[in-house]
Amino acid sequence: MKNLTFLISFFTCLLFNNFIYKDIPEINQLSFQESASSCSNNLIFFHDDTMFYMVIILVLVGWLLFSVIINKNYNKFLLENNFIEIVWTLIPAIILIIIAIPSLFLLYSIDENVEPSLTVKIVGHQWYWSYEYSNFSPNIEFDSYMIPTADLNQGDFRLLETDNDLVLPVNTKIKLIVSSADVIHCWTVPSLGVKVDAIP
Image (cartoon, rainbow, N blue to C red):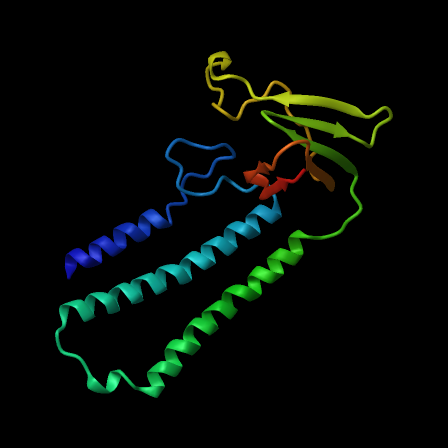
């Protein structure tokens, strides 16, 4: 029993290993990047709350499964017990409601409509992105290509470095118009909690 308790504690610690907080990806990182926006912060809180319920369910179901396998005795009244059927129907429903309510609040808070100070048009192409700042006259446009692995400098991140970076102001409402010229692409900034599928 001590070994089982140790294993449960060990894997729980691995699951909630959130001490690697950086704004950049780290080697062997098990958790989110440090949040750089309130949206990302709320997503991390929701993830942590959901993981709490998941661990409780996993431990409970694992314990029940383990006890049924180990114990050969069973209760003949357990097979058709109305009270137990009601309980194992209501408890998952209550847990789903507890998870759904914060999820909906988070979904609608992320989808706020505000007047943006800056609009950026992002178009995905195969192997590069096109950016356009449309609030200027004339519009500022540029392409951003990924730097090949052979051309990386010391300290650069493989598959994350580009020749022209998108520069955005801080503490500013920004509207992103994301599209694609050919196939479905994914434009993401994990530390901001932004992930958008670019659809042609």
